Amino acid sequence: MMRQTPAESPTFSPLYRQIKELILQALENGEWRPGEAIPSETELAQRFNVSQGTVRKAIDEMAAENLLVRKQGKGTFVASHNDPRAFFRFLRLVPLSGGIEPAKSVPLECWRAKAGPEAARILNLKLGEPIIIVRRLLEFAEKPVVVDEIYLPGETFAGLSLEVLKEHQGSLYSLFETRFGVRMIRAEERLRAVAADRTSAELLHVPEGSPLLSVERVSFTYGDRPVEWRRGLYSTAAHCYYNELS
Image 1 (cartoon, rainbow, N blue to C red):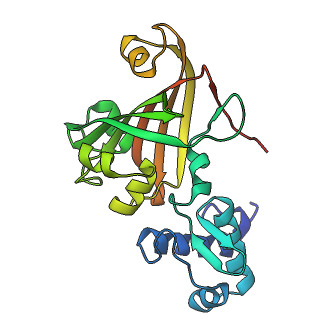
Image 2: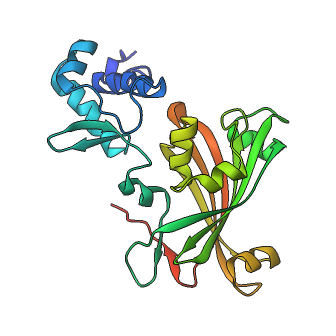
């Protein structure tokens, strides 16, 4: 019988990955807030009793995953949705004419409900647990391009209201981060083509039956915890969904 080496063991994890998990735990516990600097590599190496190179490798991987941001001559910071560079990461909609347009979020409705089977499954809630549902438009150059219906865990976003949404000037994710301490770190999306029904056609100012792009997203925070289920309809008359693969 062949002896299993540590590298083949299902429980084996490289040292830098273990350090990465410890840094992630600190982020999840709020030790360093979004936009704040984390300790230097030297300080982290002393804290975790490992080499500086091991810490650097962990930070490099976290920077590649947009969890941390290196700033030349200033240090390493916790990534934040308030950083303009983070905007395009979660909204891959660009005008056909090229470039990137600023978007404006226009809240329409915000109400409380109980999680049905689908919402409970996707958000990892119990059936009937409180949820918050938000419906909003996303406008580009004062024209409606996206209508979103967003499902959120009620306890996590307690206090969210239509008034709060209307008062906030930035993106939804920056609101979730600054007011509720919830940072979205990754998302899964499913895209398909659909025809505009009467309601979406009226909201997006397109003829009923027009082709729309349906984008369903589940967003996750630290610990791979789902905290948002979003169903959006995109008008692609003057915009396209852009994704760069490498």
